[in-house]
Image 1: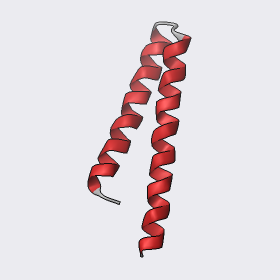
Image 2: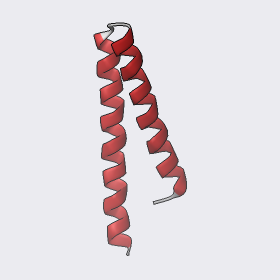
Image 3: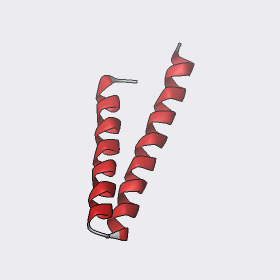
Amino acid sequence: MGLDDKIKNAAQEIAGKAKEAIGNATDNDKLVAEGKADQSKANLKQAGEDVKDAFNK
């Protein structure tokens, strides 16, 4: 997995956490859900990349 992919996944996870925090602060359930979804997507991408790395060794 390239460093570029790791950075993109981390950035997406951080953005998701920020959305979730802002949603919680403003009582915006939609924003909280979007933030959690972004975090889940980033984690799934990271897991897929980890599997690729394991097979490339």
